[in-house]
Image (cartoon, rainbow, N blue to C red; front, side):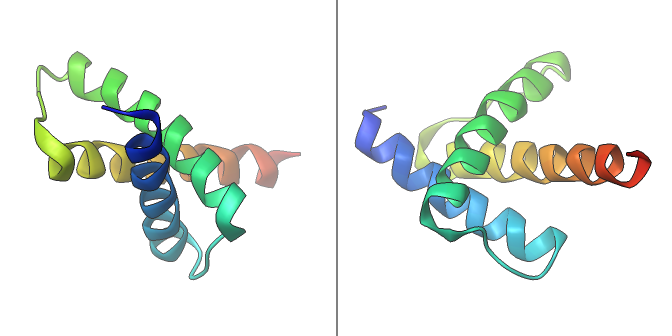
Length: 81
């Protein structure tokens, strides 16, 4: 996957995850960061579960799942601090 396509998927995944978790987005750069880190986290989680994804839609699903998990972890850490 190209870098531009990865950033577009990351931004879209971050926006979707932001809407799922707290009802808003994080701005363009924030969405990209959340989506890309979520994509990395999601790919690790999917590999641990023995699942695989292919294509753009599969990458988007993995990124959204990872971004939601990332935002959930961040919210738990913030609430304890």
